[in-house]
Length: 254
Image 1 (cartoon, rainbow, N blue to C red):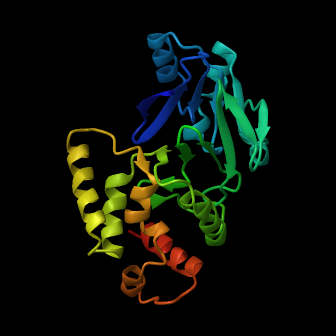
Image 2: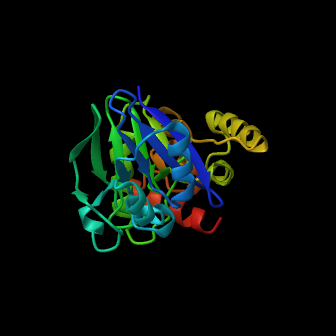
């Protein structure tokens, strides 16, 4: 089994180290900073083989060049972002497969938050490293893409197996839960999860990872077909993408 280390940095970012103990191969996902990554690598006596970038924002790529310079790792990122992610070695696109040791990793293009956003899916391990596309009970703000693009991207992810663990790059869950309750105030699964999230954050514990099953039950951005949600928005029977766009607009102003 892969070993995952979650490193909190900045105000609310997570960096992930993924190690295959059989081969020793290790990847880091979205290193905002190099220092904390180097510290944890040293503590575990792990090499660093790859950097997996999901998109170009500084808080996802800030450690790229320092890590590459110090440990000689390869940087993997979208071919659509090659002009704005520092140090790219391996350009990937939709449905490309790479290997982390003996573990396959599938690339999905998920434009919306940015045009070049990608995610890393480990099908044999039921793991998804989704950057800023999907959050626990939320989704990324549309800085570059359209509602249509983001809705299409989220639909790729919601079709993954229910047991898939979701590792997003920000601790936004408490605010996301409060917003979700304005959209589905009677959703019992959501009410229960919001209480659990409050308890975790009161203890300064992470709320990530989640699972696809949990998100399908509690994330309003994945639940646009729910009659109660549509009723709250007064959008009964409206096209899914229009409902999604309305929820995203309300979240932006929350």
